[in-house]
Length: 54
Image 1: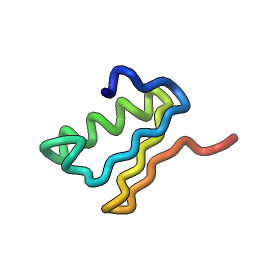
Image 2: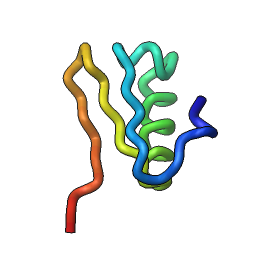
Image 3: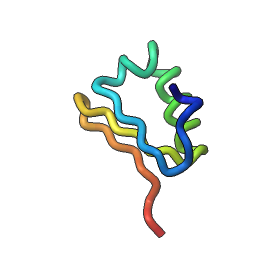
Image 4: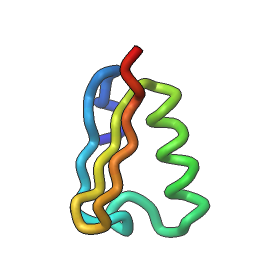
């Protein structure tokens, strides 16, 4: 699933535990998404990580 995402896409998950098994793994995945310019939203924990607009 993560490989099919492109810059400008937004990955939405219900809960953070659906994305990674540990905090370390979650941080690594979210950092990779940021480097790829992919926004991230977790609905249950109300987390949103998006690039700032210029």
